[in-house]
Every structure is written in C-alpha cells, then in structure tokens.
Figure 1 (cartoon, helix red, strand yellow):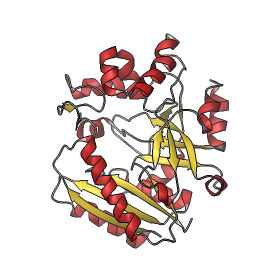
Figure 2 (tube, one colour):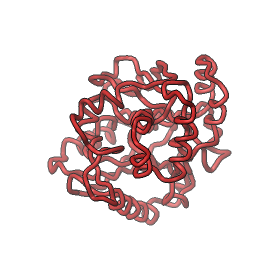
Figure 3 (cartoon, rainbow, N blue to C red):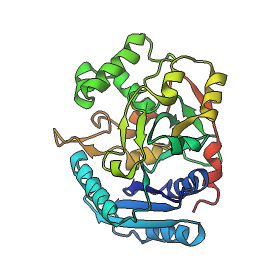
Length: 307
C-alpha cells in the first residue's frame, strides 16, 4: 500500500485520532496521512504534540495543516475549505501516490480481503453505527447497530413531513419513506441504506471522494436476511465501515450539536433544530437503536495505550 495516502479532517475533535491512525497503519498498511485541522481553540499545542508523538513512535508520516475558524461555519464554507485543501494536495503530494482514501476521522473501513482494493477503483461500504456509551470506555464492549446513522432514522421517523423535506434532498426522502415509513414499524428489522457510502480511491477523483448511496456491496446482501449469525458471517468475510460518529453523551453535547443551515442561517442540530435539553435529545435519538444490533470488539486493539 506504498502508493496510498489518507486525508481526514479534525475540528476540536481529536478523541479518536490515535486509534484511527493505528487502524489504517495495521489494517490497511497505509503510512502517509494528511490532516486538515480547523480549530477554534487557540491552544493547539496539545494536539500537535500527539501528532508529533505518533510520527516519532509509529511507522507513519503525518502532515498537518491548520486553519483557525469561528466556532460555527456553514456547510458550504466547509466545502470550500476542503476543496482548497484537495487542490493543494494534488499539486504537492508526489505523483507516486496514486491512491487516496479521503474519509472522516470517525470512519474505520474494515476489509477482509485486501485484493479487492487492487481490482476496484471504488467500493460500496455498508455502515455499522456505534451505539454510544454513557461515558466512553474502550475497555467496555462495543455494540453496533446494523442501521447506519440510526439516530437519523430515529429523528426522521418521529418528525413531520415538513421537517423531513427541509433536511433531506428528494432522493433521500423517497428512499427513507419507502424503506422505513412504509414498513409500518420503525422498530422492525427493516433498515435503510441511503446513508451508506460509495468510496472512490483514484487520486484523480480526490475532489469527489464519496457519495451517500444505496445499492451495492454488502447492502444488497443484507436486504435479504435478518438472521444475525448470517449477518455476522457476511460482515466478517466482506468489507464495511465501523462508524464511531458519537462515542458518548459528552462528545455529542460538545462536538455534534451545532452547525448552520446554509439556507436559514440559524443554528441547528445536525438533524432538526436545537429544542429543549441536549441530554433529552441524546436520550431520545442517540442512546438507543431499534432493529438488529450486536457486539463486535474488533476495534478494541487499536485503542490500547491511547494517550
């Protein structure tokens, strides 16, 4: 994997940084990383020290770029920042690096057979969603929901048609209503794959590295069975993503509750307005997942000796 590099992004959310790097060194064999760090905390030395320690102690080269921003930026502004960073990397990363994995810092892509990376320019990954701990402890069992972004399903299942129309594009809305609402039982084993990802690997596709997309890879196979043993076997033998979007309650409150809707310019939740207590919101949408869930501690090994 000497021709691969990884791009990922941080904004005052470094909790998973060491496990992320260790996972991609050991599981993928990638040793070159580029971090785009947007910070509002002026004292970033504590983060940079951790990066320097990894460069010194692990078989890895991490290059970081820092941008100071206001606490809240619009989705469109964030997109412009990323595109500028991609343009810089296209010009400066040696041409021998022909493959890139441009992903979020909380995405751990498991691949049973690495030969699929040689045969394919892109792969469609089903997402498993981490069920948050009350207080994150890497020594406790990790439980996962077969429904990626299950908290979105929890929220949208209980929201009005107007809310769903505001926060979903037409294709997302149609898929959600067909998969979940028409099942007649939001607590059933029915899941939607509309937020799983098609991930592209070629360097010339760096500007458009992935799409949320249904239909492909493991997603199609999972639609045909609800047998938990069969599902575990399929996961073990194929490729998918462990998504640790919200490790625990405090992470949700500190890191996930604010952004700006680019249309209304008002401060909102990732899905829906901030109304009421954030703890209540977490309890209602993030702390429980309906449908199929199970224990998988594969990632435990990458949290050992985390600073």
